Figure 1: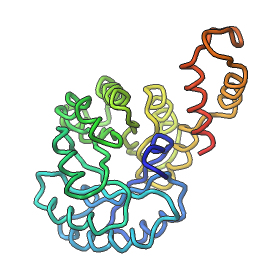
Figure 2 (figure 1 turned 45 degrees about the vertical axis):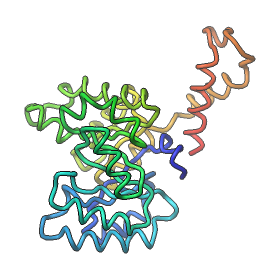
Figure 3 (figure 1 turned 45 degrees about the horizontal axis):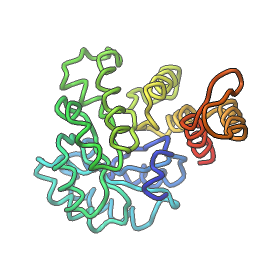
Length: 269
């Protein structure tokens, strides 16, 4: 998948690079982007082993799907060794956690020689997201860290994150890059996950992070256009002749045609 097609990604699967069974299983899963994690999901004593494992896993590939490595944060003592590992790995992207400035992102991209997806998961990252976005290939909402740093009550849902999530989407759109919603913490797929996916799509997110294989199908389905949406988009494109005109009881113009074409492209993906 070329970099410009990242907006077609629906599901971003995070998995610990230190777990060989999870890495092997990921090759059979329908996630659109695989993210091998060197950060939060890897114990301190396993960081070095995880770096070696991630290089070997990337060399084997993931069936032609794009792969990213999430490194430790730039202030971490592990960051320098992560940079070396990423430079050796056959991957398409780097995921940078706790991104707070465009310089952090630009420096990471230069050091590792890979385009960066930036995780926005601190108050400063949210405030400066519009400046960060143009230096990236996409923004990922880090909802768990963000909720913690904002001091939101545990298990309070996402009501306290609404402004931050919408600001991340606005920043991504202003910067011309895709935006991806954060993880759903309950591992099983159920009504709560479906509701969160629907909410994320209504906010404008292109896709969503997942942390368990059981979540992938629900997320893929939620962030793909329905058959009814595709049929409506195809009718609109077929009937448009240019300029403002009437279509099925409403006014359409070029921007509606472009929206319909983007929806059709995502459906084909």
